[in-house]
Length: 563
Image (cartoon, rainbow, N blue to C red):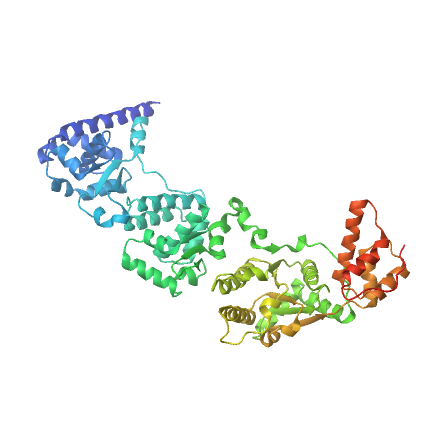
């Protein structure tokens, strides 16, 4: 209790001493006699704020003036003390030292956008940190606030405050660098800082990355490239150097796959965004705080454990080939095979082509193999890889493989990359000299061919049009499995599995009459189920009509004889 009373009294004494200093400073011309007359007071104030006696004097004057004006410049101090401005300028280092102690805050007149004005001699002014008054009124000794962060997001918020001060020209670029280095030094045990430092980035690249982190957490997935570089870096030549490094692909953020640069509709419309790896750096270490972004579902993956079991019926040759493939992709055997291939200097990627007429179960077979081997599926929608803007399609298809590569790195069990109905991009390449569209499609195919050559993982493609497949793709598929229409015995099995209530004779009759694929039989089964939902019963007599609707090749002339 006694100690608290002393502190309270000490704070009041400090305010009284600062008042004495300010009163005596008025019209003092900042002479030696003046400074000698207030030694007792300046020493006491120095102890409170851990500064020297000159700083105590200047701070007390600014503190006093700050109650009547928002900030105090050199002219304001010199007018108050009735001395030449250059007399105060001689002590600029002391003023800057007070800013370093977080006792004073500095602002510049003008703006970053008008740098010539903000570089004039009268451009700087000062104001007292509000916390100083709060501390003095509470009877506490002033200590600069801690910059320790709770987590990566809190740290990015603290960096955002510094960006804001830099944007308003209250922090020079050098000061921004010092503040961020200090912030990271105090938070060096944070996982986020540890992971970031492992990339060993130059400060300017680190700054760009932090800038993107800040905008991402504010809901902006990308920022304007040129504008961001201009805002972050005041030196024009430095801006040009950074822009050149990005444009020629030598920038470390690009080469280390932390950032992506996207082309816009016009050549000048370039944007920067975090890559998947960059996002992992930001949110991967604090998954509990940003779980939604690290959820596999957000990576466009179809979860193996969410794939529904479905009975599939294969002809003998297909069954044997698919059984071999499924055994190959079982985790233990797959890992052993990959290791052995690698030891022998062979390619470790598994590339598989499922081809055949529509409806024979190519896509569903991929799903069932994935379910049985515990492998998630990243399915590529072909239409989404073709952009209406020239040049974007190549980037989209490259992104597919980049994302898959990162997913392979993060997954304990290698997922499957599925190109479903891949006829549109695996077809024969166009002759040189055709339209820009043809050139773009050729470029896309060249990217895919190279990616298949370098693949570390599992790629399965399905196609209905094998005859259109480019020979270069044909060579790059390790396995090619042809799916034929189900034979008579398998058609019986499919009908029996999909529709209840058919007698053995009816099953043989309908299987013999219609050489349907499993997909066509599924369509008929769905129509019967819809009929049951609508009318509360299944009318097998309508089965024949549904078969006729499905059978587009002709009309049946004899009735099957269903009830």
